[in-house]
Image (cartoon, rainbow, N blue to C red):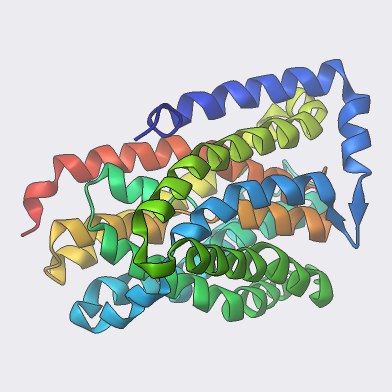
Length: 338
């Protein structure tokens, strides 16, 4: 594991501080970047998201799906958590906190945007960071590959309808064309690019060539993440300085959601008698979010400086240290599983 992945929480923290400082020192630069958009898609963010996602998509081997039947319980756990539980609990928590508990602290329009950002996080199951979490808990890499492959196929068809339904229930107007464009731009096209790249590099079963290419790409994925964090926090710098309570308010339901989903899945994995090297990554995959997609869609739907974009950015802030704490917990409780 490279230095970027090992100290990811530290790099994200430094980029958050750097983004806020730069946003206050040279706001005109970030406003100029915000203006660079086409069809509600910010071009700079789109490039950075692709730099993050593409290296991860190249790692996905869809031929691994044929092995799903060998051990279906771990995959079943991940899919149930990702698509039948997490999106709805995230939407419910967002509504309860910002319509009831925090109603006196946030105006209704801003509250709606915070809820929308949380929903987009909840509907986007983790792809990009899955391999990092699985590696850190010493999970079965082939099984993780299967889980990611199946998840990505489902995401192409399920993300937009579930997001639109939950946003509609939360009284947020959803432009369907923007939502579908985001899925095509940030899921379908990177996925196709990854498949074509694998096919070209793995010609004549030359796995060494493919593995070297993936190894060279990996640092770019993390650099894309860090550059995106600097950009997003730079754009939100004024609000963060003058409204620090907003970060705190958004973080509370996100923390509750993350820990609740993990421990529910972890308990289910124990009851299902899954082996540790499948149980631990399955629960972490179900807990983590594809925040790259959530951030991109929030920006496309609501704008770079919106409350929805801020909520997804807080998701980045919360997720990395929380997931590292859950990795540590998984290591300590390894003896619970066969």
